[in-house]
Amino acid sequence: MSMVDPLFEMVKRGLDLQKSGHKAAAQALYRQVLAQSPSHALALHLSGVLAGQMGQLQQAVELLQRSVEINPGDPLAWNNFANALQDFGATQDALHAVSRALAMRPEYVTAWITRATILQALSRHEEAVEAFRAALNLAPDRGAAWTGLWRASMESCQWSDLPDIIPRVQAAVAQDRPALLPFEALSFSEDEALHLKCAAAYAHDIVIREEISPFHHPPRPRNSRIKVAYLSSDFHEHATSHLAVGMFEAHDRSRFETFGVSFGPDDGSPMRDRVSKSFEHFLDVRDWTSASIADHLRSLQIDIAVDLKGFTRNAMASALLRRPAPIVVNYLGYPGSLGVSAFDYVIGDAIVTPFSSQQNYAEKIVHMPACYQANDNRRGIAADAPSRKDEGLPPSGFVFAAFNNCYKITPTFFAVWMKLLREVKGSVLWLICESETIQQRLRSEAVSRGVAAERLVFAQRRSLEMHLARHVHAGLLLDTLPYNAHTTASDALWAGVPVVTLQGQSFAGRVAASLLHATHLPELIAHSLDEYFALAKALADDPQRLTQLKTQLSTHRMHLPLFDTPAFTAAIERAFTTMHDRWQAGLPPEQFSVPALPTPHH
Image 1 (cartoon, rainbow, N blue to C red):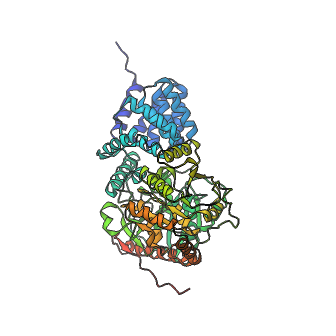
Image 2 (tube, helix red, strand yellow):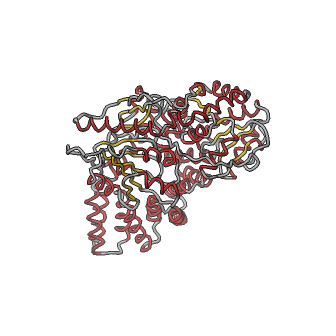
Image 3 (cartoon, rainbow, N blue to C red):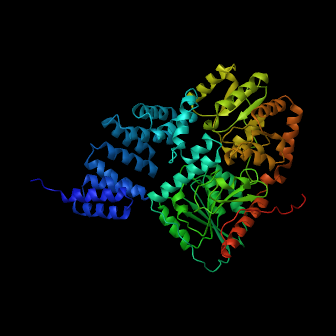
């Protein structure tokens, strides 16, 4: 007669509860098992996975680590340990753990996808392509592997297989559960309805996984000042801080009490120092769970929580899905809807988020008077610019700059750029890309389109001040779609370089158009690929007109709406006040435009 193992039966019951979404009950059962048998590998494993699902990242790592130490022969546990390590930010250790899983079971598809995702996080995109391919050789219909392969191919500028990959991604996205991450959807397609669908599915997963029930804020007496908390993992040397730090500093302290809530690293940079001083209160919460961040903000009686991350890397969306304040705002970090009504408002403008797009936003759209993008009018430009020679540029000839991240470069736009190089004699294309493999790949793409390899020049990484200074050598900045230059475009305009853009159909593809309106240069916005080409070529062929545009930018820089930090801050404060007044009056969020105040004549 066989003996029934009571502990095993409890673990099995726990797993059933876990699968049916009763996480707290499952966790209680696993704890009971571990109290009786602390080295029960399966209970440790399942309990670790569950801790990860509940957002308890450190606990997940500790439990799974004990599980693989006790039972090192379980590839499933190694794969889950790898995922927990990656969520925790220990990416290199995660790669080691998933390699253990694959050494034991080379046909383990999910582990290949885990490996590929970790390699992407390490910017090892060529190897990620190989790992996604390995997964697809084993499971040709795995949607997540197709979408991952597409992203890794774009990141590494491997375009030859895109005609095969894209239809598979479209099929994976058409499912009820779209297989594309929201941020990836923004550069996959211009379809805002698809962006909303991917964001809604992703947010729904977080809510279910972490058992989030949004907090309902009872009415309370008005704070003496409106308390605004900005949440980000980028309060250091990062584009978000470069854009927004001037706004943080310019807030009217007599009416607003500001909180910076940082869940990212402290890189010890001057920018970290400046940002942390720009708020009245600066909270470093990088070791906190999302639930404890939300609880703390509620205890501080924050009126407005502003999410500067959305669904980008190292975001903390689950803290905001818990509604840590009566008003939750999606702003700056994520150019699209976050897909759920837990976010009340998205701050845009008439170009990036026309009210006609409201059906593709879960949030109510708010229009800033000039442009949605904050800018810092104290951004320093180095006095001594590197020379053309320092930058590897030829001594003469027109320089087309395209400083967007590699993944934004599409074969369509690259073909137009090559046509420009063929038609503008002696011109070069100036790109930013550190990987030598990708540089070689782009050079051979150029050669296949009739352009000599040496006409592609790759810029080195430099400090922001030096990067802005070297723009002096650029004639024009060329933009991309579906995902525009955002900070890259405002950097160029601040440094006095005109930008040529093709206005797209979604927020991510309309940012440069918005920036150009806010610098009084709407004539640089094209509405078709042919017009984009013609505009760039006409400017490259007309040095006088170009000099005029550059002078216009440099001379009027401080008075252009895009770079008027005090006016911008006053406008966002009017937006916050309107939101707060509606809440105080018991009214639901509603779309509105912030009126422009008459500007004093300079």
